[in-house]
Image (cartoon, rainbow, N blue to C red; front, top):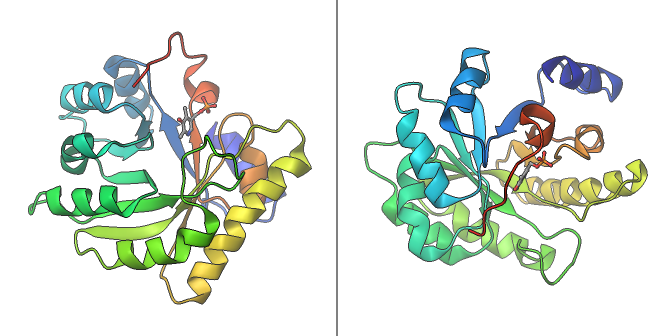
Length: 222
Ligand SMILES: *Cc1c(COP(=O)(O)O)cnc(C)c1O
């Protein structure tokens, strides 16, 4: 996967090493993650709070960098604020405030991205683009969080140009925020089916599950 990412960086005129692979390990057991760590992979993404807790405890000695990327309910923020290094899926101020309150004093500030609904589907999570500046303003003011950038899960498209247009939309919102003075460095976008288009549009973190670990054998409800 790393070689493919370096090739895509070069193809789309991105600087070498500017795209980071976040290996999405949801549904895969701790021992598979441990093997990936042994191969040099450092960043892992998890979606489900319970599963994340079990895995983080099992891999405490290996200390990978954990990114929480799933939907987060307010009654489950404490564990995430204690065990995660990053949260990509913040779309409401209430969740951000709880993570900020609950972040242990001994830990560095939690790195966060705001999840944006770029496809406009009512069922999708993510803040609406029009509400993004106000949310960014409020989250940036929280002392125990560090606002790093934006994340999106666009509607699946098979056509490369259609994929690119959705990622371009997130990039445009990112540039709008940096233009307003926000100090951001992260565009978390692109999954197994569309990561090349995301790299073309400026992704700095691509979140890849299937293309790294294979097909997921089962699904969680929450
Ligand atoms: C599962 C998941 C991924 C990885 O999806 P793949 O298609 O398996 O690469 C990326 N981001 C989020 C938020 C996910 O839930």
